[in-house]
Amino acid sequence: MELYHGSNIAVEQPLALAGRRNLDFGKGFYTTRLKSQAQKWANLVASRKKKNPQSIVSIFECNESEMMSAGYMYKNFTKYDMEWLEFVVACRHGEDYTNYDIVEGGVANDQVIDTVEDYENGRITAKQALDQLKYKKPNNQICFRNQEVIDKYLHFTKAEAVKQ
Image 1 (spheres, rainbow, N blue to C red):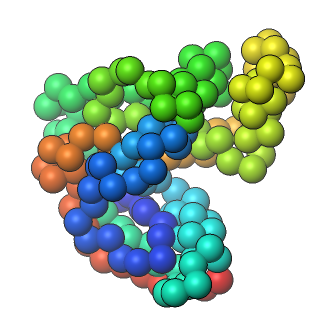
Image 2 (cartoon, rainbow, N blue to C red; image 1 turned 90 degrees about the vertical axis):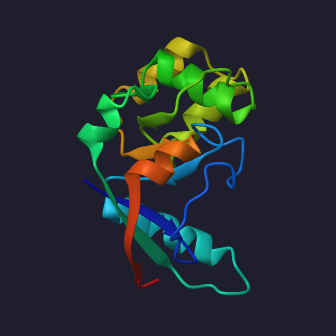
């Protein structure tokens, strides 16, 4: 399968521990199955940079079946539900104590982040948050949290510039 990573630089050698800690799925190297999602991420990162404000999508090949059969701990959130909501809130607070090597699921993007933050800050209940999220179609992010998985199964193929 082809995976994409958006940034302001080409990332040929991803590092699991180089990213920020309090993201949706914790610290790791984030990719997506959706090229358009990576392009949006690249433009967002570039818009924040004073130096090197270019948008780049790095493209990787990943042998998903081989990776999945190797016995790594993989969690896939297929929808915005209570488990996803609690996991994202825990990760954003730096309180994720799971041992997942790979986490896949929806992004707490601009269409759902207000709901997540309202729940996180106690302004709405879990039921209210889930009622708001149930009509949102999750997009996709895959967080590689284990360097061994990255080194064995995520292979850089090329980088492409993205129009801003």
